[in-house]
Amino acid sequence: MNITAEQERSLIMEILTRMDVKKEHAEIVADVTLDANLKGFSSHGIGRFPQYVKGLKVGTIVKDADIEIGKETPSMALINGNHIFGHVVAYKAMEIAIQKAKETGIAVVGVHDSNHFGVAGYYSDMAVMENMIGVVIANTEPAVAPIGGKEPILGTNPIAIGIPSNKHYVSVDMATSASARGKLIEAIRKGQKIPENVALDEEGNPTIDPECALRGSILPFGAHKGYALAFMIEILAGPLVKAASGKAVRGTANPEEMCTKGDLIMVIDPSKFVDIDEFKEDVDEFIAEIKDSGENIFIPGDMEVKNINKTKENGVALDEKLYSQLKDISRELDFDLDKILI
Image 1 (cartoon, rainbow, N blue to C red):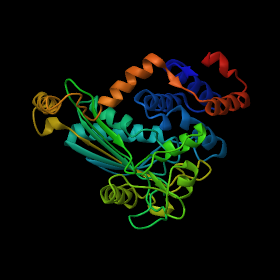
Image 2: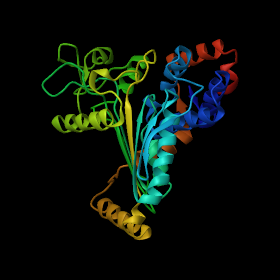
Image 3: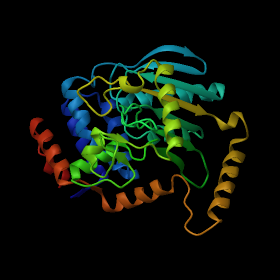
Image 4: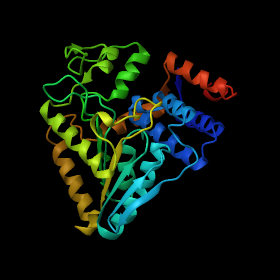
């Protein structure tokens, strides 16, 4: 079955409200989760939501806490998320980075003791909407083996970059692995196989079975290049921000463990370098050059725009197992799921 964006938002708000989550926090979680579905990142959308519900139940996601700024200068801050929703922590961190960048030209905010925050591109978009460049990186639970090894040590370690433009949505949001872990979890839920050249089993052999892949390891994208980038992110989103790295990272996929991953958020104000209008015009001229080089040329961000239009027209897909999970949640919270979805 398919549901509308409004139905997805209403469902998330209903569940979180009944679980006594602050309205402001619930609205951010709903917005980020819906953003993932609209852009086509279904593995980080409503399909991931039952994980957050479980985290609330077991206490690894804390409802009654606020972020704390541990260290701060005019151009940086280090945030303790106190294990509230990762979406809320990243949202607040980006707000701080934007405000500081407006004053200093560039700002970096580190985060520790947070939680899974959905799609990284949502937060880089926040900077773009302020005519700024946003960069977001994070580490995750081990899922990727080093080149030449078979034991997962690195995370899928996403990176998102958003750049302001007059005419285009310019954004990259990707894992440094050949597949996000969430896509494997989604494939298991849907009873699907995964593509070839994505993962290895526990013995280090190629596999298209998502369960074997989760027990084994996901390949880095681009072989040694993806591995190197994931390696660097592990440090920048780990030791640099007082978070864990490598096998000590927990809680991004398993909601029963307290999350130990970290985030690093950077904002650059182009107007401190050049005239902002000239910058955006130069960006658009470069994009025109790219698109004029052939037919059906895409730039980073075009697929998301295409998916947004498609999802708004056709709705968000709920597979039977996900619907059943949401039905169980609604039954526990004593409300009729179908009154919202049908």
